[in-house]
Structure formats: structure tokens, C-alpha cells
Image (cartoon, rainbow, N blue to C red; front, top):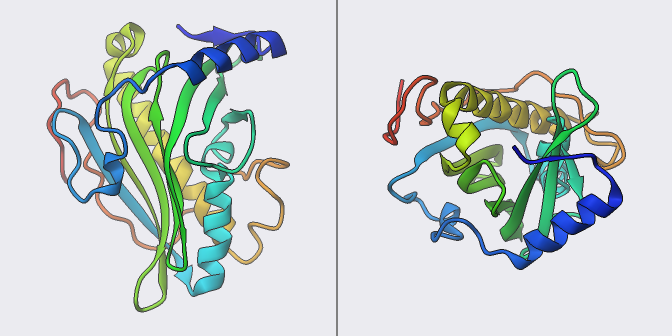
Length: 228
């Protein structure tokens, strides 16, 4: 299991190794497309944030600042707003322990910063318990309604994740809910005053309607998508 004492030297070594590595899947950038690659569990989950350019800007800056991850309990090393080609280590403390932490290497594979779309995607690198890509995108439709969507395709890669598949899938569901909650809170008029790197946003209540996830339900062992 990838773990770290979180010492600066250890993190630096892991970061150098991650920067030298290639993504662990061939379909790099595929979360930009309407059709996701075959052979992976797939997910599209979105939440309504509000109305107008101000909501788009607040939520978009939060997302580009890794707010989804920071607001869900992850640390980001080294911290900087998401930029295409950047390699980061996502770190997550294990329950009940200060050390060790899971260290999860990722690479930003695309970013977008347009008047009606702000967000980015990252892909997995060697040492990540999954294999695939995840995108975080804030959009504003023609009616001015603002949405936050998480899109992902992935399959379990590490032996310990495969061994505990039902738990791993459940944890992924919970992580997505926390991403949505963090961004919904940040998008509110009082939710994004503090930069996420200074004070990670605590998950809040989700706002508005959401779509149906298409990730395999906990306990399923195949790669087919599931719907409700």
C-alpha cells in the first residue's frame, strides 16, 4: 500500500518519480469527450449550483484551485492552481492515524477556462490505486444556470484495491458526494471568500437536483455501468 511519513524528502522523491512516469492508461484526455472509453467503470454526476456569471466564477476558481479535493480531506503537493501537464501528489490521512498517509500520484491532463466553462481533469500515474481519469467542470448553460459535473472512467489497479473491491467502490461513491458538496458550498455567496489552499472548504449540503450516477454499485465485480 502506498504510504508516506509525509517527510519533505520522501514527498520530493515520490514527486520526482511521478513526474518521470507516464499515465497508466492509454485514453489520456478522454473525459473531454461525450463518449467515455469502454472497459472502465464510468461516472457522470452533476449538481446545480445557481445562476449567473458570478456563481460560475466563484465555483470555477474554487475547482481550479483543487477545492474539490481540499474540501474532501485531501492535501495537494505541491500546491498550485491546476495547470495542464502538472504532476501532483494527493495525500489522504488514514482514519484514526496521523501517519501514514496514502500518497496518490496524478497528472493534470487538460484544463479549460472560458466564459461558460471552467475546470480540469487529472489522470492516474503509477502508484495510484486506480487506473483512469477524472474531470471536474463548472459550466453555465444558455439560460444562465450553473452546474458542476464530475466525469470519470476508472478501474481498480492496485492489488489491495482489487482485494477490497466493494469497499473501494463505496469509498469512491462517498468521495464524489464530498466533491459535490464542497463545490456547492463554495459556490454560495458566503462560501468562497477564503482560498481553498489556506482553509480547505468543509463539505456542506448539496444544492439543487443531481443526475443519476452510472458507476457500478458497491458489490458489483464487472466493468459494466449501472443505472437506477
